[in-house]
Image: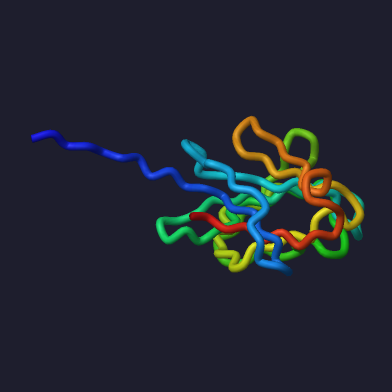
Length: 139
């Protein structure tokens, strides 16, 4: 008797939140994490949000990196969150572990939004256009 094992290939689906039309499907293969990098529209500094997903395909933010304090960025730690500082003074909030449902970015309103998965980088506003409401979904 032969046994066959199939690896589950999760996919990240990017959907136009206003029309509910899928825009892009990305095979996550061996990647359990992805990030979105952008310049914050109010404090004008870089922010990087890091995400993972659970067995129920729920998207979870687990870390955020800020490069400047200001309006619109987290100022207080919640529960088990931890604040550390990077080599270049960046503020790293880890252990966030908060389910984000739904995860939606309004891309490129002021600056670019860059989706990173492994060594792949996708400029969301160049790909989909400014002010597009992009919903992220794991399947």
